[in-house]
Image 1 (cartoon, rainbow over the protein chains, first blue to last red):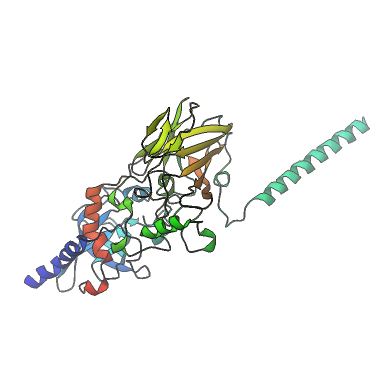
Image 2: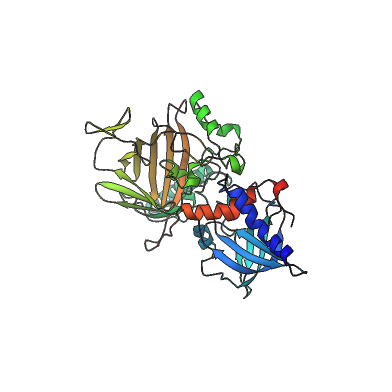
Length: 135
Length: 302
Protein backbone atom coordinates (compact mmCIF):
# COMPACT_ATOMS: atom_id res chain seq x y z
CA UNK A 1 0.00 0.00 0.00
CA UNK A 2 2.72 2.38 1.06
CA UNK A 3 4.77 1.41 -1.98
CA UNK A 4 1.83 2.10 -4.29
CA UNK A 5 1.22 5.44 -2.65
CA UNK A 6 4.90 6.29 -2.97
CA UNK A 7 4.89 5.41 -6.69
CA UNK A 8 1.78 7.40 -7.34
CA UNK A 9 3.34 10.44 -5.71
CA UNK A 10 6.52 10.31 -7.80
CA UNK A 11 5.20 12.36 -10.74
CA UNK A 12 3.79 14.97 -8.39
CA UNK A 13 7.06 15.18 -6.46
CA UNK A 14 9.02 15.40 -9.69
CA UNK A 15 6.75 18.16 -10.93
CA UNK A 16 7.23 20.09 -7.72
CA UNK A 17 11.02 19.69 -7.85
CA UNK A 18 11.38 20.73 -11.46
CA UNK A 19 8.83 23.53 -11.46
CA UNK A 20 10.79 25.87 -9.26
CA UNK A 21 13.67 26.93 -11.52
CA UNK A 22 12.02 26.34 -14.89
CA UNK A 23 9.22 27.94 -16.79
CA UNK A 24 8.81 25.65 -19.67
CA UNK A 25 6.19 26.05 -22.35
CA UNK A 26 8.43 23.80 -24.37
CA UNK A 27 9.15 22.80 -27.92
CA UNK A 28 9.11 19.22 -29.18
CA UNK A 29 12.51 18.03 -27.97
CA UNK A 30 11.13 16.32 -24.87
CA UNK A 31 9.14 13.66 -26.77
CA UNK A 32 9.86 10.38 -28.45
CA UNK A 33 7.91 11.24 -31.57
CA UNK A 34 8.74 7.93 -33.25
CA UNK A 35 7.27 5.88 -30.41
CA UNK A 36 3.59 5.44 -29.68
CA UNK A 37 2.21 4.24 -26.37
CA UNK A 38 -1.42 3.14 -26.03
CA UNK A 39 -2.98 3.17 -22.56
CA UNK A 40 -6.39 2.38 -21.13
CA UNK A 41 -7.36 4.41 -18.12
CA UNK A 42 -9.88 6.43 -16.18
CA UNK A 43 -10.03 10.19 -16.60
CA UNK A 44 -9.47 12.17 -13.44
CA UNK A 45 -9.43 15.63 -15.06
CA UNK A 46 -9.79 17.22 -18.49
CA UNK A 47 -8.14 20.60 -18.06
CA UNK A 48 -9.23 22.86 -20.92
CA UNK A 49 -6.58 25.57 -20.79
CA UNK A 50 -3.80 27.48 -22.50
CA UNK A 51 -1.12 27.03 -23.67
CA UNK A 52 -2.12 23.34 -23.87
CA UNK A 53 -5.03 21.29 -22.61
CA UNK A 54 -4.16 18.49 -20.20
CA UNK A 55 -5.82 15.10 -19.81
CA UNK A 56 -5.10 13.44 -16.47
CA UNK A 57 -5.96 9.76 -16.26
CA UNK A 58 -5.14 6.77 -14.07
CA UNK A 59 -3.79 3.57 -15.55
CA UNK A 60 -3.87 0.34 -13.54
CA UNK A 61 -1.34 -2.36 -14.34
CA UNK A 62 -1.86 -6.13 -14.05
CA UNK A 63 -0.80 -6.02 -10.38
CA UNK A 64 -3.33 -3.35 -9.63
CA UNK A 65 -0.78 -0.58 -9.27
CA UNK A 66 -1.97 2.78 -10.49
CA UNK A 67 0.08 5.25 -12.53
CA UNK A 68 -1.10 8.81 -12.82
CA UNK A 69 -0.63 9.85 -16.45
CA UNK A 70 -0.91 13.28 -17.97
CA UNK A 71 -1.26 13.86 -21.71
CA UNK A 72 -1.15 17.24 -23.34
CA UNK A 73 -2.98 18.36 -26.44
CA UNK A 74 -2.78 21.63 -28.29
CA UNK A 75 -4.54 24.79 -27.18
CA UNK A 76 -8.36 25.04 -26.99
CA UNK A 77 -8.65 26.94 -30.29
CA UNK A 78 -6.77 24.31 -32.27
CA UNK A 79 -8.56 21.49 -30.48
CA UNK A 80 -11.92 23.05 -31.25
CA UNK A 81 -10.95 23.26 -34.92
CA UNK A 82 -10.22 19.53 -34.70
CA UNK A 83 -13.64 18.69 -33.24
CA UNK A 84 -12.75 18.56 -29.54
CA UNK A 85 -14.48 20.51 -26.77
CA UNK A 86 -14.33 21.15 -23.07
CA UNK A 87 -17.43 18.98 -22.62
CA UNK A 88 -16.15 16.08 -24.76
CA UNK A 89 -14.34 14.34 -21.89
CA UNK A 90 -15.43 13.99 -18.29
CA UNK A 91 -13.85 12.73 -15.08
CA UNK A 92 -14.70 9.05 -14.72
CA UNK A 93 -14.67 8.32 -18.46
CA UNK A 94 -12.92 5.09 -19.40
CA UNK A 95 -10.68 6.07 -22.31
CA UNK A 96 -7.96 4.70 -24.51
CA UNK A 97 -5.16 7.17 -25.10
CA UNK A 98 -2.44 6.97 -27.74
CA UNK A 99 0.46 9.31 -27.13
CA UNK A 100 4.09 10.13 -27.79
CA UNK A 101 5.80 9.56 -24.42
CA UNK A 102 8.38 11.91 -22.98
CA UNK A 103 12.00 10.80 -23.18
CA UNK A 104 12.73 10.92 -19.48
CA UNK A 105 10.39 8.09 -18.49
CA UNK A 106 7.82 10.05 -16.53
CA UNK A 107 4.16 9.16 -17.17
CA UNK A 108 3.66 12.08 -19.50
CA UNK A 109 3.09 12.36 -23.23
CA UNK A 110 1.72 14.26 -26.15
CA UNK A 111 -1.68 12.93 -27.09
CA UNK A 112 -2.28 11.53 -30.56
CA UNK A 113 -5.81 10.18 -30.09
CA UNK A 114 -8.33 9.64 -27.34
CA UNK A 115 -11.00 6.96 -27.76
CA UNK A 116 -14.08 7.78 -25.72
CA UNK A 117 -16.37 5.24 -23.97
CA UNK A 118 -18.82 5.37 -26.89
CA UNK A 119 -16.07 4.54 -29.38
CA UNK A 120 -15.63 8.06 -30.74
CA UNK A 121 -12.00 8.73 -31.62
CA UNK A 122 -10.74 12.27 -31.05
CA UNK A 123 -7.70 13.04 -33.19
CA UNK A 124 -5.31 15.53 -31.60
CA UNK A 125 -3.31 16.03 -34.80
CA UNK A 126 -6.34 16.76 -36.96
CA UNK A 127 -5.92 19.97 -38.89
CA UNK A 128 -2.20 20.15 -38.17
CA UNK A 129 0.82 18.90 -40.05
CA UNK A 130 1.59 16.58 -37.18
CA UNK A 131 3.55 16.77 -33.99
CA UNK A 132 5.86 19.49 -35.27
CA UNK A 133 3.45 22.38 -35.24
CA UNK A 134 2.14 21.73 -31.76
CA UNK A 135 1.97 25.22 -30.31
CA UNK B 1 -23.00 38.68 -97.79
CA UNK B 2 -20.42 35.92 -98.13
CA UNK B 3 -17.62 38.42 -97.44
CA UNK B 4 -19.41 39.69 -94.34
CA UNK B 5 -19.75 36.09 -93.10
CA UNK B 6 -16.03 35.43 -93.75
CA UNK B 7 -15.11 38.63 -91.92
CA UNK B 8 -17.25 37.67 -88.90
CA UNK B 9 -15.71 34.17 -88.87
CA UNK B 10 -12.24 35.71 -88.98
CA UNK B 11 -13.07 38.03 -86.07
CA UNK B 12 -14.32 35.11 -83.98
CA UNK B 13 -11.16 33.13 -84.80
CA UNK B 14 -8.92 36.01 -83.76
CA UNK B 15 -10.87 36.46 -80.52
CA UNK B 16 -10.64 32.73 -79.72
CA UNK B 17 -6.90 32.70 -80.43
CA UNK B 18 -6.36 35.78 -78.26
CA UNK B 19 -8.28 34.28 -75.34
CA UNK B 20 -6.35 30.98 -75.69
CA UNK B 21 -3.07 32.96 -75.66
CA UNK B 22 -4.08 34.82 -72.52
CA UNK B 23 -5.07 31.54 -70.83
CA UNK B 24 -1.81 29.91 -71.85
CA UNK B 25 0.22 32.85 -70.52
CA UNK B 26 -1.63 32.89 -67.24
CA UNK B 27 -1.03 29.15 -66.82
CA UNK B 28 2.66 29.67 -67.55
CA UNK B 29 2.88 32.34 -64.87
CA UNK B 30 1.35 30.15 -62.15
CA UNK B 31 3.82 29.02 -59.48
CA UNK B 32 4.92 25.43 -59.27
CA UNK B 33 2.94 23.20 -56.94
CA UNK B 34 5.56 23.42 -54.21
CA UNK B 35 5.78 27.19 -54.24
CA UNK B 36 4.06 29.40 -51.71
CA UNK B 37 0.34 29.55 -52.38
CA UNK B 38 -0.93 33.09 -52.59
CA UNK B 39 -4.40 34.20 -51.61
CA UNK B 40 -5.44 34.22 -55.25
CA UNK B 41 -4.42 30.57 -55.55
CA UNK B 42 -6.02 29.50 -52.31
CA UNK B 43 -9.62 29.24 -53.29
CA UNK B 44 -12.24 29.67 -55.88
CA UNK B 45 -12.52 32.95 -57.69
CA UNK B 46 -15.01 35.33 -56.22
CA UNK B 47 -16.45 38.76 -56.69
CA UNK B 48 -14.17 41.76 -57.12
CA UNK B 49 -12.74 43.39 -54.02
CA UNK B 50 -14.70 46.37 -52.77
CA UNK B 51 -12.95 49.75 -52.99
CA UNK B 52 -10.96 50.86 -49.95
CA UNK B 53 -12.36 48.13 -47.76
CA UNK B 54 -10.46 45.35 -45.98
CA UNK B 55 -13.06 44.82 -43.28
CA UNK B 56 -14.18 41.33 -42.39
CA UNK B 57 -13.23 38.29 -40.38
CA UNK B 58 -10.19 36.70 -41.98
CA UNK B 59 -8.35 33.45 -41.39
CA UNK B 60 -5.19 31.93 -42.87
CA UNK B 61 -6.23 30.61 -46.26
CA UNK B 62 -3.91 27.61 -46.09
CA UNK B 63 -5.31 26.35 -42.79
CA UNK B 64 -5.48 27.57 -39.21
CA UNK B 65 -1.93 26.45 -38.39
CA UNK B 66 -0.33 28.38 -41.28
CA UNK B 67 0.08 31.51 -39.18
CA UNK B 68 1.57 29.84 -36.09
CA UNK B 69 5.13 30.44 -37.37
CA UNK B 70 6.76 28.48 -34.55
CA UNK B 71 10.23 28.67 -36.14
CA UNK B 72 10.06 32.37 -36.80
CA UNK B 73 8.66 34.74 -39.40
CA UNK B 74 6.95 33.07 -42.32
CA UNK B 75 9.24 34.27 -45.10
CA UNK B 76 12.48 33.88 -43.13
CA UNK B 77 12.14 31.11 -40.54
CA UNK B 78 15.15 30.26 -38.43
CA UNK B 79 15.53 26.81 -39.98
CA UNK B 80 19.28 26.83 -40.57
CA UNK B 81 19.03 27.40 -44.31
CA UNK B 82 21.58 29.93 -45.62
CA UNK B 83 18.93 31.83 -47.54
CA UNK B 84 17.11 32.50 -44.27
CA UNK B 85 20.05 34.06 -42.45
CA UNK B 86 19.16 37.61 -41.46
CA UNK B 87 21.47 40.60 -42.14
CA UNK B 88 22.32 41.30 -38.51
CA UNK B 89 24.36 44.27 -37.42
CA UNK B 90 27.00 43.32 -34.82
CA UNK B 91 24.69 44.67 -32.13
CA UNK B 92 21.71 42.83 -33.63
CA UNK B 93 23.61 39.56 -33.54
CA UNK B 94 24.60 40.20 -29.94
CA UNK B 95 20.98 40.80 -28.94
CA UNK B 96 19.84 37.75 -30.92
CA UNK B 97 22.34 35.60 -29.04
CA UNK B 98 21.02 36.91 -25.74
CA UNK B 99 17.55 35.65 -26.68
CA UNK B 100 17.21 32.00 -25.80
CA UNK B 101 14.35 30.70 -27.90
CA UNK B 102 12.53 27.41 -27.52
CA UNK B 103 11.94 27.20 -31.24
CA UNK B 104 14.00 27.33 -34.39
CA UNK B 105 17.50 26.19 -35.32
CA UNK B 106 19.06 27.90 -32.29
CA UNK B 107 16.56 26.54 -29.77
CA UNK B 108 17.85 25.99 -26.25
CA UNK B 109 16.79 23.49 -23.62
CA UNK B 110 13.54 24.28 -21.85
CA UNK B 111 15.30 25.30 -18.65
CA UNK B 112 17.37 27.95 -20.43
CA UNK B 113 14.92 29.96 -22.47
CA UNK B 114 13.84 33.53 -21.80
CA UNK B 115 11.00 34.25 -24.21
CA UNK B 116 8.75 36.99 -22.76
CA UNK B 117 5.83 35.13 -24.38
CA UNK B 118 5.96 32.49 -21.67
CA UNK B 119 5.45 35.02 -18.92
CA UNK B 120 2.36 36.25 -20.74
CA UNK B 121 4.07 39.56 -21.48
CA UNK B 122 2.45 41.44 -24.38
CA UNK B 123 3.81 40.09 -27.66
CA UNK B 124 3.84 43.58 -29.13
CA UNK B 125 3.92 44.56 -32.77
CA UNK B 126 5.00 43.21 -35.23
CA UNK B 127 5.26 39.90 -33.37
CA UNK B 128 1.45 39.78 -33.36
CA UNK B 129 1.73 39.17 -37.09
CA UNK B 130 4.40 36.54 -36.63
CA UNK B 131 3.07 34.32 -33.86
CA UNK B 132 -0.26 32.58 -33.83
CA UNK B 133 -1.67 34.76 -36.58
CA UNK B 134 -5.08 33.16 -36.71
CA UNK B 135 -8.56 34.52 -37.16
CA UNK B 136 -8.27 38.28 -37.49
CA UNK B 137 -11.23 40.62 -37.42
CA UNK B 138 -10.72 43.89 -39.27
CA UNK B 139 -13.15 46.71 -38.57
CA UNK B 140 -12.97 50.07 -40.27
CA UNK B 141 -14.64 53.44 -40.49
CA UNK B 142 -13.58 56.60 -42.36
CA UNK B 143 -11.02 57.43 -39.67
CA UNK B 144 -9.33 54.22 -38.69
CA UNK B 145 -8.93 50.52 -39.20
CA UNK B 146 -8.93 48.29 -36.15
CA UNK B 147 -7.40 44.84 -36.14
CA UNK B 148 -8.65 42.37 -33.58
CA UNK B 149 -6.18 39.53 -33.26
CA UNK B 150 -7.37 36.22 -31.89
CA UNK B 151 -4.20 35.44 -29.99
CA UNK B 152 -4.11 37.19 -26.64
CA UNK B 153 -7.36 38.95 -27.62
CA UNK B 154 -5.30 41.92 -28.74
CA UNK B 155 -6.17 44.91 -30.91
CA UNK B 156 -4.32 47.66 -32.71
CA UNK B 157 -5.41 50.82 -34.50
CA UNK B 158 -4.28 52.02 -37.92
CA UNK B 159 -5.24 55.62 -38.51
CA UNK B 160 -6.49 56.45 -42.02
CA UNK B 161 -7.70 59.99 -41.32
CA UNK B 162 -4.73 61.57 -43.04
CA UNK B 163 -2.59 62.20 -40.00
CA UNK B 164 1.15 61.93 -40.62
CA UNK B 165 3.29 59.15 -39.20
CA UNK B 166 4.84 60.45 -35.97
CA UNK B 167 8.58 61.13 -35.94
CA UNK B 168 10.96 58.98 -33.98
CA UNK B 169 12.75 60.96 -31.27
CA UNK B 170 14.72 60.12 -28.17
CA UNK B 171 12.36 58.47 -25.71
CA UNK B 172 9.50 57.80 -28.09
CA UNK B 173 7.72 59.58 -30.92
CA UNK B 174 6.79 63.19 -31.60
CA UNK B 175 3.02 63.74 -31.96
CA UNK B 176 1.82 67.34 -32.39
CA UNK B 177 5.01 68.64 -30.79
CA UNK B 178 4.71 66.35 -27.78
CA UNK B 179 6.95 63.38 -27.04
CA UNK B 180 4.78 60.30 -26.57
CA UNK B 181 5.90 57.05 -24.98
CA UNK B 182 6.81 53.94 -26.98
CA UNK B 183 3.97 51.41 -27.20
CA UNK B 184 3.83 47.67 -27.48
CA UNK B 185 1.75 48.05 -30.63
CA UNK B 186 3.34 51.25 -31.89
CA UNK B 187 1.81 54.12 -33.84
CA UNK B 188 0.33 53.19 -37.21
CA UNK B 189 -0.98 55.16 -40.15
CA UNK B 190 -2.46 53.69 -43.31
CA UNK B 191 -2.67 55.02 -46.86
CA UNK B 192 -4.59 53.58 -49.79
CA UNK B 193 -2.14 53.21 -52.65
CA UNK B 194 -4.87 52.01 -54.99
CA UNK B 195 -8.48 50.83 -54.73
CA UNK B 196 -7.62 47.56 -53.00
CA UNK B 197 -4.18 48.03 -51.45
CA UNK B 198 -3.49 49.58 -48.07
CA UNK B 199 0.05 50.49 -47.04
CA UNK B 200 0.58 50.72 -43.29
CA UNK B 201 3.61 52.27 -41.62
CA UNK B 202 4.29 51.73 -37.94
CA UNK B 203 6.92 53.15 -35.59
CA UNK B 204 7.34 53.83 -31.88
CA UNK B 205 7.45 50.25 -30.64
CA UNK B 206 9.03 48.99 -27.42
CA UNK B 207 12.78 48.46 -27.30
CA UNK B 208 14.80 45.31 -27.36
CA UNK B 209 14.57 44.76 -23.63
CA UNK B 210 10.81 44.20 -23.83
CA UNK B 211 9.86 42.45 -27.05
CA UNK B 212 11.07 39.94 -29.62
CA UNK B 213 10.35 39.97 -33.31
CA UNK B 214 9.39 36.31 -33.46
CA UNK B 215 9.42 33.01 -31.60
CA UNK B 216 12.91 32.19 -32.88
CA UNK B 217 14.21 35.12 -30.83
CA UNK B 218 15.03 37.55 -33.63
CA UNK B 219 15.49 41.04 -32.17
CA UNK B 220 13.90 44.43 -32.84
CA UNK B 221 14.68 47.81 -31.36
CA UNK B 222 12.98 51.13 -30.71
CA UNK B 223 14.35 52.25 -34.10
CA UNK B 224 12.17 49.74 -35.94
CA UNK B 225 9.99 50.83 -38.83
CA UNK B 226 7.49 48.34 -40.18
CA UNK B 227 5.82 48.59 -43.55
CA UNK B 228 2.82 46.37 -44.18
CA UNK B 229 0.91 45.93 -47.41
CA UNK B 230 -2.61 44.56 -47.24
CA UNK B 231 -3.89 43.79 -50.70
CA UNK B 232 -7.45 42.56 -51.12
CA UNK B 233 -7.09 40.36 -54.15
CA UNK B 234 -10.84 39.86 -54.52
CA UNK B 235 -13.80 39.92 -52.18
CA UNK B 236 -12.75 36.73 -50.39
CA UNK B 237 -8.95 36.92 -50.36
CA UNK B 238 -6.36 39.17 -48.77
CA UNK B 239 -2.57 39.12 -49.05
CA UNK B 240 -0.50 40.44 -46.19
CA UNK B 241 3.15 41.44 -46.56
CA UNK B 242 5.55 42.89 -43.99
CA UNK B 243 8.94 44.57 -44.39
CA UNK B 244 11.25 45.00 -41.39
CA UNK B 245 13.49 48.06 -41.36
CA UNK B 246 15.53 48.32 -38.19
CA UNK B 247 18.98 49.86 -38.75
CA UNK B 248 19.98 49.15 -35.16
CA UNK B 249 19.50 45.40 -35.63
CA UNK B 250 19.76 44.78 -39.38
CA UNK B 251 22.00 46.21 -42.07
CA UNK B 252 19.17 46.47 -44.57
CA UNK B 253 15.37 46.12 -44.77
CA UNK B 254 14.08 42.59 -45.33
CA UNK B 255 10.78 40.86 -46.05
CA UNK B 256 9.35 38.95 -43.10
CA UNK B 257 5.99 38.03 -44.60
CA UNK B 258 5.40 37.80 -48.32
CA UNK B 259 1.80 37.88 -49.52
CA UNK B 260 0.60 35.73 -46.65
CA UNK B 261 -2.83 34.53 -47.80
CA UNK B 262 -5.95 35.13 -45.75
CA UNK B 263 -9.49 34.21 -46.70
CA UNK B 264 -12.77 35.78 -45.69
CA UNK B 265 -14.94 34.00 -43.17
CA UNK B 266 -18.67 34.06 -42.57
CA UNK B 267 -19.49 37.47 -41.07
CA UNK B 268 -21.48 35.70 -38.34
CA UNK B 269 -18.42 33.77 -37.21
CA UNK B 270 -17.90 34.05 -33.45
CA UNK B 271 -14.14 33.95 -32.93
CA UNK B 272 -12.91 31.98 -29.91
CA UNK B 273 -10.67 33.50 -27.29
CA UNK B 274 -7.04 32.48 -27.25
CA UNK B 275 -5.44 33.99 -24.24
CA UNK B 276 -2.28 33.74 -22.16
CA UNK B 277 -3.21 33.27 -18.52
CA UNK B 278 -0.34 33.35 -16.00
CA UNK B 279 -2.18 31.00 -13.65
CA UNK B 280 -2.97 28.48 -16.40
CA UNK B 281 0.60 28.75 -17.69
CA UNK B 282 1.95 28.14 -14.19
CA UNK B 283 -0.26 25.09 -13.68
CA UNK B 284 0.64 23.73 -17.11
CA UNK B 285 4.34 24.08 -16.38
CA UNK B 286 4.04 22.53 -12.93
CA UNK B 287 2.05 19.53 -14.12
CA UNK B 288 3.58 18.95 -17.52
CA UNK B 289 6.02 21.43 -19.04
CA UNK B 290 8.75 21.25 -16.45
CA UNK B 291 8.66 17.52 -15.58
CA UNK B 292 8.51 16.61 -19.27
CA UNK B 293 11.67 18.61 -19.81
CA UNK B 294 13.60 17.24 -16.86
CA UNK B 295 16.82 15.32 -17.52
CA UNK B 296 16.31 11.62 -18.09
CA UNK B 297 18.73 10.69 -15.35
CA UNK B 298 16.48 12.29 -12.78
CA UNK B 299 13.32 10.62 -13.96
CA UNK B 300 11.88 7.69 -12.04
CA UNK B 301 11.53 4.40 -13.86
CA UNK B 302 8.07 3.48 -14.97
